[in-house]
Length: 402
Image (cartoon, rainbow, N blue to C red):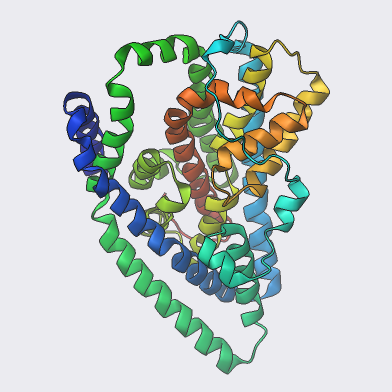
């Protein structure tokens, strides 16, 4: 499958470059693929979390697993942000940046929501509205509660509930496996659509790369170091998980995440790869991966930190150590709090900019290359989730293939 996806990536790029006028005729394939993936996300999350949490058993076991999962996500996100902060201060990509290059935003993201408000909104007032709107944090919160309290009911009721959601999960995974076969076609159409937006304007593209090249290089270097050094070191040092084998096993979800720029849309493929190739039990994967797809944004948190310092450098504003510490902590909390919000990346950036008193219009500076960098940071987000699943499974005494 990963070879098919790689061929689709190359073919889609060539198609967009040499036949840009025909891209409009294949765009529907990418839209259909994303719709099919999104169709199974919520039933998959609800059924997998409820069966996972109910299967964990005692409150002590759930508490231990929850603490391990959240600790891994917080520590790796913090390491990612600190790495981004270090590189952006060393390379200084924003010094002397051309402010006239900034794109204008039609509407600025809603940065008036406090982090406390965002986190409070993870508790649903109406779970059916959350399900209809696709708000992931409230859905995950309710599913965890439902699974937890399932264990406190009578044995007869537990068996009925578990059997029902086990069956739902089994059916959804069958549907998912059928959708996965369409991945190369979807990736081909999505990449062709994205590339065609740039292919017709070679001079404009060269100008973007010449003016934003150092900024892009800083972000990509940070993402590369975090993936291949930080995450791999954490995996090997903590539980002796073989990072090379694991990385190879995750090729299909990583290429899909890169193409779609969506952690949630990639979730069905991520769960399949972690369970089938790494050998992680569904008990672990059904808890850590849906949670990670929503709240664990290593790549995005790192990107936000670099982007905010870049904007400060471009405007000639020298942030103090205290202000940079606020950037680190706000980026960490915003990564969790803004999950499920449309344009989550821009909302996160607006929150961080507001926290240190930088102009929100600065977002326009990074918009030109945001879509390209979004592909890379989403792949890192997904990879961070899979690393967590493997490490936590090993810590729970499971025998893995890595």
